[in-house]
Length: 130
Image 1 (cartoon, rainbow, N blue to C red):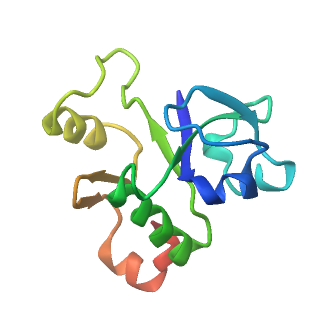
Image 2: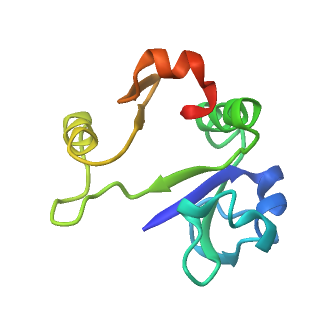
């Protein structure tokens, strides 16, 4: 299942949530005004299985989320167990790359690396394309 990941202090801006949810154990409503902004992580019933993160928990993801907020205005990314129907869950970078290349995903982050199927010229013309 697809789920949103967001900085803990941003969670209440998008979700009706109290406290933290570092392990995606809470299903909570997505605020109605935000559902159209984050449709990929909003279930058909308007809920989401939110994961919150703090800088102390994962500095790289936390900084990436704020980078996305600066870039596109939204500090929420799609987080998933990363498995494609019919395949086992991704266990290695090679598995991730194979699934990335064989699905409709446009971008993939593995550690400090960003892979993108988007044409670099497109990114220059439209930096919000990522």
